[in-house]
Amino acid sequence: MKKKLNCILLIDDDEATNFLHKSILEEADISEKIIVRENGEEAINFLTARLDDHNYPQPDLIFLDINMPVLDGWQFLQKYKKLPPQAKGKIVLFMLTTSLNPADRKRAEGESNVNGFKTKPLDEAMIDEILNEFYPEYL
Image (cartoon, rainbow, N blue to C red; front, side, top):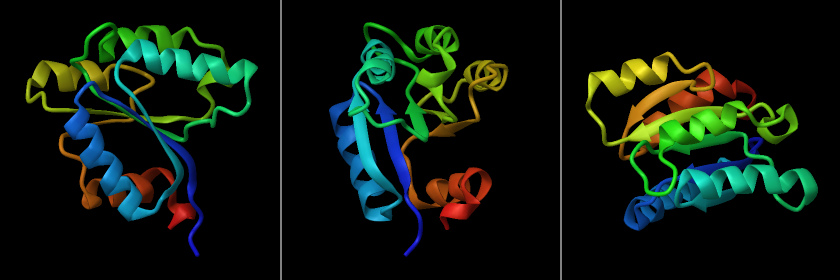
């Protein structure tokens, strides 16, 4: 049996996309938990809540959309940078978006906390690529 990630955090406001991505991740069977938050503010609250309540799992991997209400992906990254290290942990963070704008890709590449930029939808090949690069011990 392969080792599983502790938790994957999906941050996206689209319900159908979250359903699809969660289904794909469940089928891949790579994580103990998959948590969905519908905007950056909910995700920041989740990451900071675990500082006081250890029942909240530490994500190993975050998939972050760009365009969301309340707090978009870029605003999330600004708040994420200011979190204490124990809230962030050793998280691998990917922008997962429908944006084909080269400026978004370039901006993501300039963000120190962003490990990659992928275009939706998430698929098995992307998951395999991420695992091979960042989690080879989980294969």
